[in-house]
Length: 251
Image 1 (cartoon, rainbow, N blue to C red):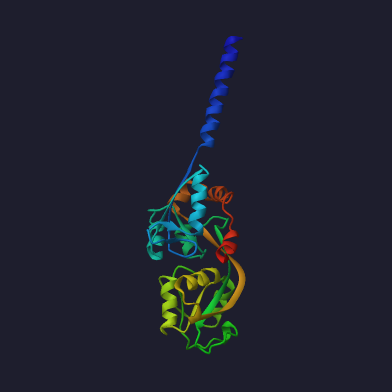
Image 2: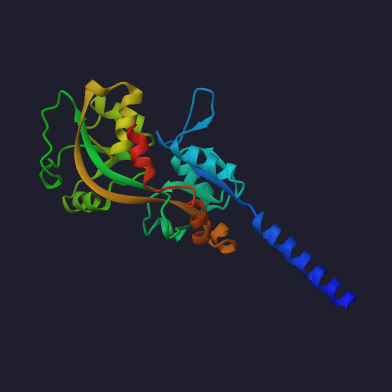
């Protein structure tokens, strides 16, 4: 009988240790990210800041995650994740082309609420719909972003093409100094950038769409082979709220 109780106690101890180990399992993630204010940027001290950085800090503080974020140009971030040098890229919109070398989970990291088109304040252009934009107009957008899917299709149907800039600040300077005629960007990001650049009186915006589009934490194929990325995103979204950034970026 003593031997029986000893075996039972031993097995219970092993089970408790296994459960303890399971609970303490930490999800490790190295993330490459382009600079997109107000979500991800470096301050004057070179420190990572922004709404998404705050979320990553909360995840780390939970004890369930060990996340590092490296800010770099969009093209380099994309390539680094494709090559498996980083575990994930944030944030990025799903496209069939990107899905060839990135793994997209079911659940978004962030939801964007609408895009806008901008002109110089002294331009007499009035936005009356994408199909009515003069084909001679030169439009710019940031290479790392797409406008919402509805507007994207409308631009394509209207045979309107874009030149691309590396950063939104560069795109606004191209607009202000007359190198392009119009600029298209996510509303929240664009208006934050305008405030930061202190060019409020030099540009004017029109709403393109209030359609919600999702952006993702996209994983490298290498990482997704050894991890259930949908479960990883479920854990992340227990702390992260994909809709919260729209409200935060307006404050």
